[in-house]
Image (tube, rainbow, N blue to C red; front, top):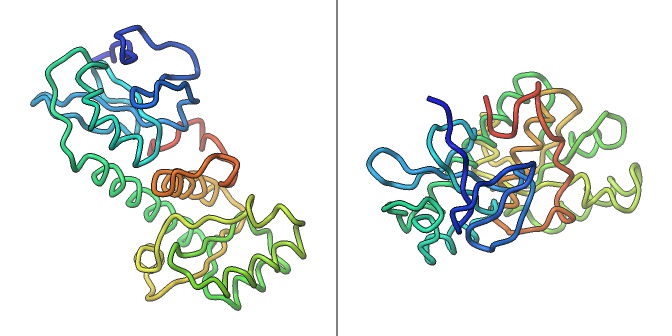
Length: 230
């Protein structure tokens, strides 16, 4: 079934490379938004791959924005239909994004593009083609500070922002890498790591609400497919 034209909150058709968030009424690039559609039973569901049929609406890719859309009952107005947005929708989206990030990190690891452990990460920063350093969101400040200093020495002052991600906690990192208690990891450059960075970036933005200036640049599309598409 062909997908119908998406709508903004006022029912206007959405076209072009940007969309309007139904919660904040601001326009963003589609990579910074999450598409939602109504399932056959009327429940609002996230469309992370952006390929589900039917009309859709868009919400800024942060937990707060999704919660605000639920609170304001913006999904029903945007979709012009009787729909139900569960209060647990923000948590559902977070779980799906976290699973995508873990799966991408696991694939990068299987491709030999991940090193973990403080000493190995520090050595990779000093000599390897490091794309980004991943700290557990609950990592101790001292370890983060020392690796940030290593990034600055090799790549310059802005590297701690442009080359650091903290989307997953240590349990999630360990689950993705098949190890226990992973605090620090480094992604080496390669196709699988580029997709991983994109998904980690999306998760961190969703959980923290950080702006694009605070998170490494989105590497864009992988193999011509938009973010979230397998």
